[in-house]
Image (cartoon, rainbow, N blue to C red; front, side):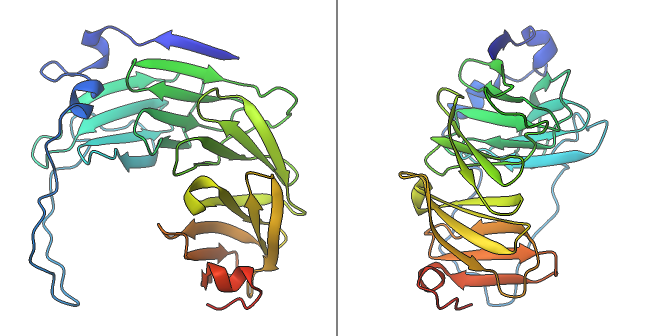
Length: 271
């Protein structure tokens, strides 16, 4: 099911003296000033700015905050079922828009890397997308043929083509970011707890209950490598570097191992 719902009128969804999200996306002004002066080793100067959501604080825990790729627009979402957008200028941080998601306390919200949409999820068998260009909310799911009661955990590929959700019983659900349809599944031996994309979105790493880190080729949908994360009983977090040459794996032991990915795939497991 993919249901598109128009947003409330401008007086309800936007602040009185500001434009919508689309106005911010069309602004090419840089928030961060680039400087040729390098920071001295070990020293970092900073100053506290006005709270990002000072104009509209959340009524409950905030589970996601993220900047848009343009550096000015920031989202905040949480258990009060609201997705809020703020223009971060460091002085007023005006609220641009607020969307109420009636049936989904938000556990995760994330911009697509291309900046066109926001994906929202909670402890529900469906998820939402918010189209920034058309200002429309879509409810997606339940997914055909799947029995997951929660789609709260997901990652988006760097090329904005694929959304990978943590599923039941070791399954990873691959969703097309364009059509929002299920395009494939991957199956681990243990439960899935963490995902991270690599190689520009062509590969996926996963970890979970069996303490292994899996590498998947998303072209063939096959596992190309599996190895134990050193000292791990169960994996709970993964992260890859921008160029995918390194990845970090966190586990229930409290240790974060950092690996050279080529060495790990070659069986040397250097870290």
